[in-house]
Length: 58
Image (cartoon, rainbow, N blue to C red; front, side, top):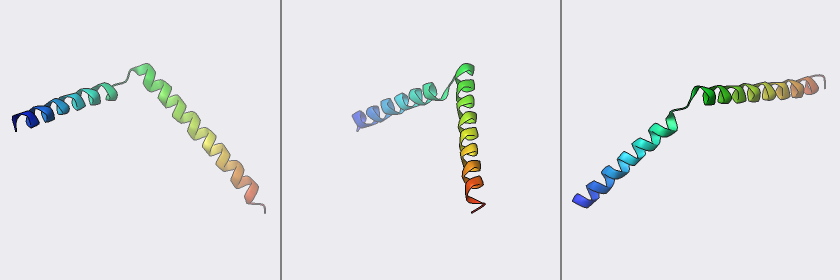
């Protein structure tokens, strides 16, 4: 029983540490991700506009 609790507690601590390290990002990383998302939205919007433009007249 003691070993099981010890293993679970160790796993819990590792998961907390991993979550903390994965969740934090620097300002530069945040700006890069924001730019990539904005470009993706723009590209998908442009593609959607072209598809709608082609299919409406028919």
